Image 1 (cartoon, one colour):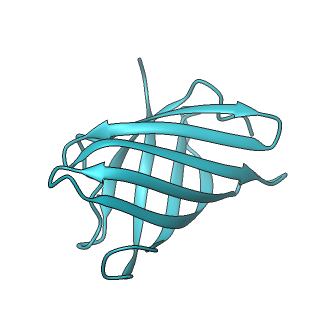
Image 2 (tube, one colour):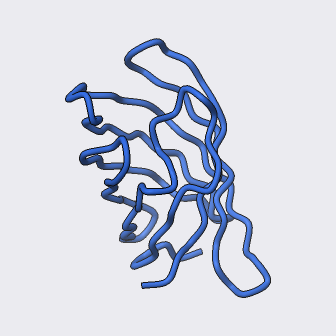
Length: 113
């Protein structure tokens, strides 16, 4: 699975998450290394770095500055689903490594330009 050049938007998130429908992720990929920048809504700016396995699963670490000016960090495991129209939906299980240390689930879907 190739994530290079794909854009995603959050469609679902647990209550303690800070990513929302206004947050857009821009992904890049080089071999099995995936990276992204993201911003919008409660996220002023963030970065993500991950490795991807042969099935397209992502093992990621992320960090961002939120609307309150706090630096937040976490880890996430994402499982891809290819939709009927060819877009990718990522089912994510995440955990904060800063703040309250809570965990949750989210879903992001690929969007067009």
